Length: 447
Image (cartoon, rainbow, N blue to C red):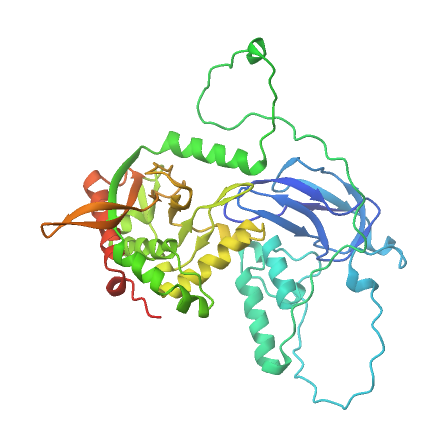
């Protein structure tokens, strides 16, 4: 009996994805959790594993195709029809372990009895399946607490902790290697991405015939570029933006950073201005929670978030991506700097997970490394504010009747005028600046 596999719910309201690669061929026999497809959402590029074992009967999608959640991707044939000698796309299934020399008997680790909670494919998102593979957890033995019995990341971690507790520290299972194909699929000729209109939320006039003035070239937008365009249009159309400009004197802060670069590096941390900006903004958000919110226009309510998860814009070859650091207000500065470095690296290498890119409540974008005297960023919908930072410059400043060279950092706070007034924005920006100008006392730096 044929068994269809549809695009699973990718979480956080994501409704579609673009097929990047098809990693199997029709007729292949795949193992459960073996890589099946690679898709790109508006959050990240993720690998979708096979939810079941069996022969690939039909592939319903191709590269560059946009598919909706619930749309059939692959149809599997009857598992019983798979021939034992078929090329199973899972390296672990075709490796023959080398004989091991005799060894002294070791005490057996406590056995953890598990009962399969699922008889069919386990309902879980691709990121949860990947986490289970990394922790060596059998999804069939995990009780799902999510909607409709879906297995969540927390369920997987809890199952891993239970096994580790029962077996003892020395017997904790090593992460299971991700299943890989037995042989790389043959090169596919990828068709050009189909053209379709952007969802711009406004009516645009027809374009003129540009060919009358010379040669032109039409280039398809990548899925990420399309998503950025649509999100920015949505934000600029729906949210009445207002921007407050200010400057912070970061002379002392820069001295702290320069003085502690090597001590921080010895601790495995790259100390940067951006880490201080994230921490200062997070503490200011606790003081001004209106800017850590989302406006529910249909309900006429402001949804104030009691967590402070700060997104930071990272420029990549594919486009601008905003990963999220969680609970920045509650973490020491060095932890923020350490997480920021690791997160930015994963994003630039294309290894960020969906969890790395969702759940933000406020965004910081620092273009200082690229130059410029200022910028007015567009709010990252559905947030209500974004902090823009340009390049710091030494300027002559009058202090106590004397002219001194000071390092001044241009800031621009853009916010939703529906939820805050100009005075509110000025007070919030001042709360950030106060912390930047007194880093030792307000940021609790200890090296």
